[in-house]
Image (cartoon, rainbow over all chains, first blue to last red; front, side, top):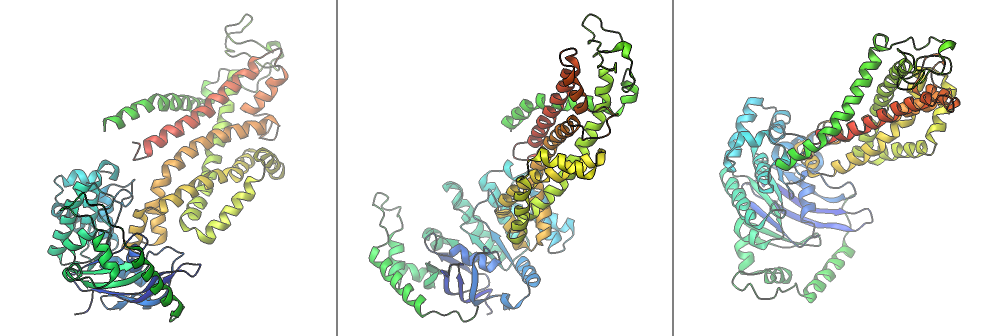
Length: 292
Length: 282
């Protein structure tokens, strides 16, 4: 089957020449949830932004390809790329507080995209939006549609954003730590909601997170990232049962457990990190970008 | 919700007082020929330096007294308001349009557009504004349109700097990124997503700028560089009043009070409007 998202050997650098992504390869099958885990600064979000075409101006892609349903983003001109990304992908953002335009009503923001980008009629978009709000269990859709973002709670806003992400039936959703900014009690509901909608709509998700608990519950496959490099890639069950890489083992060991909440947290072992850094430094030395 | 409502009520007196004075002054200016008790230009040396109505020696029909040429002060203030308001609206709106447009472009697009616009603003701000205005009017020639043009040319930077900073911070918000992912064009995002969020600041600044324009016009009148010397303006009345301060203090004090009240009202009105416009404060 043709992968929904195929990233081949993607490298990106900062203006000072430092690599932030190191020959990253990963592919997401249609309808699959692929988790992308790693500590902060590992480049998880960067990969998501690269796929969606919103990398910061300072980050430059120097190598590799990204294909969405077989179409190479690098071969399209800017406008065609925007259209493709807009029609086939969506983002569930990290912070629901800043992800909605504060001066526009929720309803206008949600329907706008369907009408203006996908060319739907206003009526069809309105019906669709109400259907999605129902799917994310929003009980008073009319009130919510008329509200401004600041009138809703964080959890409500995240539901709205999830509904908006699924509304246009994208093939791929990038979920960028969608629960980090939320209350712990709300986090669980939101995760369950994303899982539910993912199953119902058969959408592939690239799920960026640092929470291994979320990975275990939600994803079929995992890529473990360290310093912009994929150190291990496996099916979720296998990764937890038999982690191959020392860093993955250390990461799993560092997860707090409900069974023994008073055990002190175990940081990732220094020697593991030192080994990884040496590995990466050696790879960097040998690395020459294939173009650019 | 309740807190918001209380906050709104708390703002109301400010809005009503400032707006009330501005409306009163504006209506007086518009209907000046109907309202003014006397001809503002009619001189009568028999009636020179009449005091305001509550002092001994006042004449009925000359409510705020007369100046050293026997012209009615109240009528002159009312007619002077016409020029003040024309300058306030025209100059502030022009400055606002130029400055906000450039600020929005600089803040949203960044890069070269920002560098060029910001350097121009820096150069502009290096000139002392009042001297710059005097110089401009000297070059353009006196007259209403020159004064308006001079104020617009000088003060667009106020809008540009603030709107640039606001547009910049708004552009970093996730909702702008989401709009980009959805496939909106850059111009579309700037106008539909960013502009509405900087609008409250534009409105507040616009009102403030109207007050500033009134002051600048008064300053130019004061140094005799505004419009023709025949038409009364607040600045020219103040300049004349200064000369006769020991004989007729009212010629200086009443236009000053009018000027201060108007400028203060413009700035307060702007602040109150901003609070009203801002969806988060509303």
